[in-house]
Length: 303
Image (cartoon, rainbow, N blue to C red; front, side):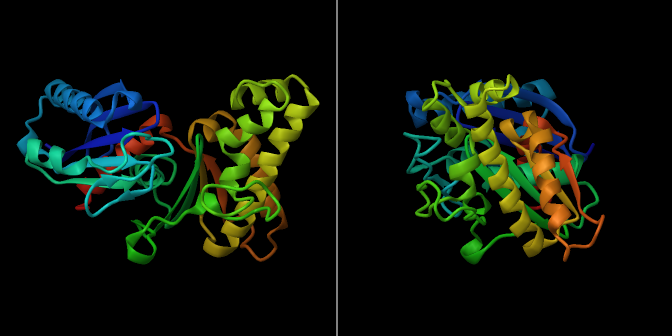
C-alpha cells in the first residue's frame, strides 16, 4: 500500500480534511465550517472529529500516517505552529494548532502557507505536473502566490513565504494592511472588488462580476481595474521568475479564469524579453482540493 498523509486546508469559512496517497488520490474526506466566531478551541475540537471520521472512512490507523500537513493563510509561526492571522482567522491568532494534533495522533504535523500548499497539490496531481518552474496566483479573499523550482517551493529569508500578493502594481492605489499602497491584493482580491462595488450598491465581489457581465459600466470599470492590476503583476513576475507555467487558482481566480488568462496573455504579448511560446497560462486543475492535496504532499515528501 502506498504511503498516506492527512491534508488539511484551513480557509476563512471552510476546512477540508483528506487522506491522500502518494499519487495524490483522495481516499477519504470531510468538510466542516471554520466557524471562527466560536473560538479556536471549538474549531480544534471539530477538526479533530473531522480527522477521526476521515481516518475511519479510509480505514487507516493514525500510526501509519506519514504526517499531517495543514495549509493555512498566513501569517503564522511555522516553528511553533502558532496562527497569527487576525485577518481571515480572527480569534484564532496566538494559538498553536500543530502540537495538539501531533500529540493526539502520534505523528508529525506542520503548517504550510495555503498558496504553497495549492501549488504543491497541482505539482503532484494537477496542472503543474512536470513543470520545472511554476508560478501560481490564488485569487479569492486575498491574493496568494507561490513559486515551485525543481520540485521545491521557493522560500525567503528565515524560511518565510514570499508575499507575492503584495507586489506593488499602482503606487497611487489604495492603502493595504501590508503597509504598502496599490499592491495586487488591495486592487484585485475579492474584498477590494467588494469595497469598490459598495460605492455603487453592489453587495459583494460576485455581484460586481455579475453586473459587469450584464453590461453595467461601473462594475465593468471595477473588474477592468482588477484585471489591469493582475496584468501588471504578471508582467513583473514573468521577468523575475520566467516560469514555464502560470496557474490561476482560488475561488475568484478559477470562476473568472478567462478574465485572468486574457490579462496574463496581454502581459506575455508585451514581454519581448521572455522566451516566445515557452510560458503557458492554465487554470488550476484540482479546484478546492489543491490545498488539501498539497498539504499532504508536503508530508509525503518528507516535509
